[in-house]
Length: 107
Image (cartoon, rainbow, N blue to C red; front, top):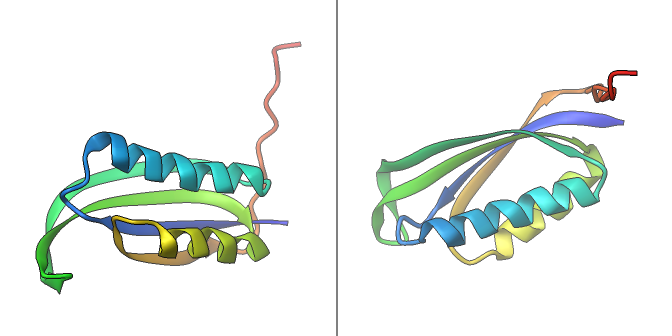
């Protein structure tokens, strides 16, 4: 059963657009591989931080909204923890149950 989650990721402001996209593609690939679906990628851009993280006062924020089986979230978070360039992240469950919409081909 799929559940709906969102993960807010704080990345280093020194990462280039290609590197940020590679990190997001990796996360999306894990979600897809485990039978989930990325619903929204909300790019917030560079923002100031309330306190320094790794001696940096700015960070690049991206919010992912996705549907994924609950047991697969740990694997996604494990990969986020070991990724270079990601300072912090926060995952929140938005709904206990998510129905995938069936795509029709117009027949």
